[in-house]
Image (cartoon, rainbow, N blue to C red):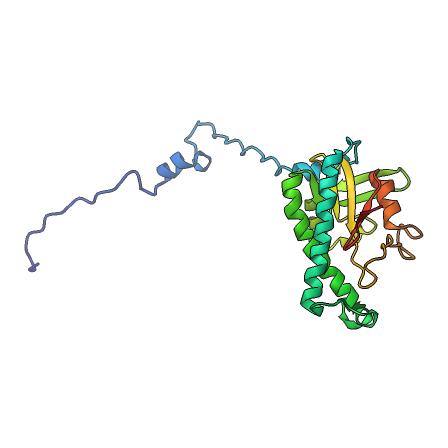
Length: 265
């Protein structure tokens, strides 16, 4: 524009809705308003306190002591036969797969079973027998979960945890989320002395136990029945074995499942 030319002043436009002024702030946040003379200060009540996040049903049940073992109905005989036949087949399948992978058409010798193949995180010896047992156990448990999902959907648990109190002779079921939380927090020592059977058949509630099974995978002498594992010195159940503790804590006669032999008590 040339110097000296006439200019028309254009009024500046303001958008009242977006104007950042004291009055606008007052409308949006009354607690920031400055009262006029003689006007009472507006008191804005604090926001209501938020309730604490709800505790899961399983955790609250365990905390309240509602996880104690309860009486259950007798397991149907026909269903028991189907379950035990299937568990026997899973044990055979696990043995066959592991042997085929490591030894082809033969089984390991006693010397091979005793061979040291490494150390665990605490420096303890790991033998080939231990490694084979873990591999077979995993195969069998995967097989078990698939079959029981069809035979007894919702009516079984894989490796559930129970805490038994010999003084009061009461048993408490520990939900998976409680166990995982303790392990995540580095409080695994609190699980010492808990019982962890491989398979529990129940009435759609792990507190209502109907049958208990443990897989056993001997490295050699597979035609000889295994025995329940004895608890070592210093263990809360020293001097006793797994089978007696399962029966005492869970109220049923536990059974073992072994390749080539099947289910036995």
